Amino acid sequence: MHGTLLLARAEISRLRRNKRYLITTLALPIVLYLLIGTRAKDTVYGVDFAAYYMVAMATFGSFSGALMNNSVRIAQERKEGWIRQLRLTSLPPNAYVIAKLLAAMAITIPSVAIVLLLGRSVGHVHMPIGSWISIALVVWLGALTFAALAVAIGYRFQPDQVQPIAMLIYFVFIILGGVFFPLGGLIQKIGEFTPTYEAVKISTDLVGGASVPAGLVAGMVVWLAIFIGFATLSVRATAETV
Image (cartoon, rainbow, N blue to C red; front, side):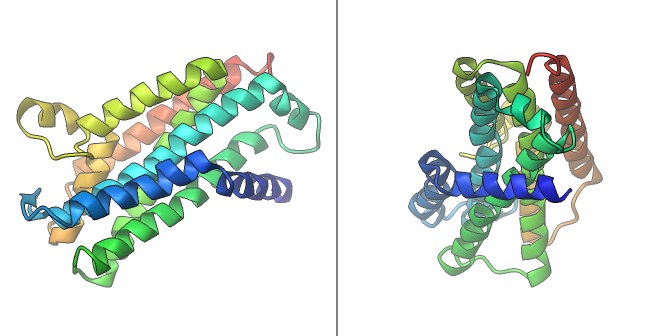
């Protein structure tokens, strides 16, 4: 386990120097929140727009960091033979995947924390401390779903295929999840089955002090199980070739 943690720490250090990570995971959600989230005065999902956009941008940044950066990197390292080299060491067979998941969860923390702090200081979002902690945990743990998806895509496809595939899947989830803008009508009905919508809706329910439907929590758990299943199948399918 010690070796796995060292590998995860090395991955975190590398990601901290990655400009793409800094832009998509930190800079973009912050800029969007400051430009849009603090200006509109509408009510969305029963809460002020500033509160809705706060949880939406926290979701956007954390989920993007978990999926986009990891999937491309995994595919590239698989092509270069890095995963094969790690298998020749004394590390456990699953050390690489676990290290990637741990790193993905670690690098999402700044994005979630900064956007929530902006919501409190700039967006004037007020709620009990327990609600702040619960929202941070929902968004942070939700990112694990997309970290698992990154493993599935990164192991399954070549580096030049991964980025467009991951981007297409991610933006479908983002749009249908009502992250960039709230949805209504049939599109919202469809989007209610996405993990992005579930994370945003659970968080806005917590902001408004409403009870969180058990179906939303169950939905996020189901998506996590699905993507972990995909990741497991992808890793096993390429076990002899990487």
